[in-house]
Image (tube, rainbow, N blue to C red; front, side, top):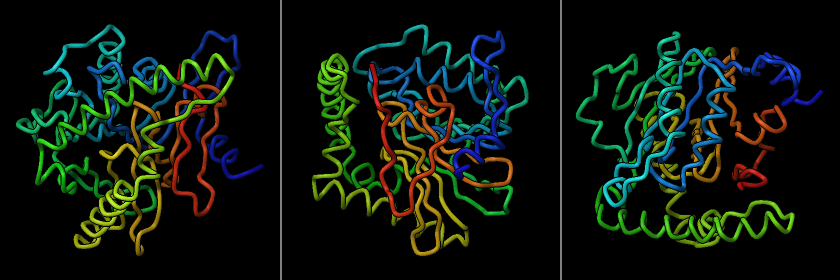
Amino acid sequence: MNAADQFLNRARHREMPGNSKKEVIRFRTIWISDLHLGTTGCQAARLLEFLQATDSDTLYLVGDIIDGWQLKRRWYWDQVHNNIVQTVLKKARKGTEVIFVPGNHDEAVRQFIDLDFGGIKVRDELVHVTAQGKRMLVLHGDRFDGVIVCAKWLAHVGDGLYTVILKINQVFNRWRARAGLPYWSLSQYIKLKVKNAVSYISSFENALADEARKRGLDGVICGHIHKAEIRQIDGITYCNDGDWVESLSALVEEADGELRLVSWHDIMLRGSATELPAGQKNYPVPEFIA
């Protein structure tokens, strides 16, 4: 039995297909970010499935949950987006500690920092202590992005270009799906192949790791750059939980404090969590997105 199988045997409480009960995989903590509700690019149906199939003591919403930038340009909000909000509120009512850490796309919520709404705590940043006693800084991460800090107009331009790329990608992958080919991400390809993009990601990760180190913490958990990853940076554990536009990934903490990346594809189709091989930095995107 490999590590991933052992992990799921400890973490999940499953029902066999055909039973009336829904399968629920329980974790100590779940972190999700960059949902971008309010956009057509948000994989809302799959996010709803993930939320309904998982449970946790604490659920962190690590920024860019609602895309205020896009909603200002064009209003888009369907029933599935409503269902996601209701599901999160229901989790809060049933005892899950839900903590919302706003990002740059939902920065309007930052005016409500330190307030609670419907059982959801709004916090600018905070320190999460794992079951192993590790102290992890939790924040969205946009304030460590030089583009956001120094040239916000450029970030808006980049956001518009990203939206165009996603639309092209959706058409391209419909063709690939018909041909029986797996999902392929144009935006991820650009990020990995363009030297400046790779340098930007590395600088972002190092800056956050440095901030955790300065505060005497063991690591940092963030979102923002849509690149799911767990890696060590000079003794600091850097974790990015990815996004729900392409990666469809989340960071989870199991009962014994171990941190892992999981995806919708693993939870819903195979029912197993994926552990990144040693040295692998890029979290695999789902095999398809219809």
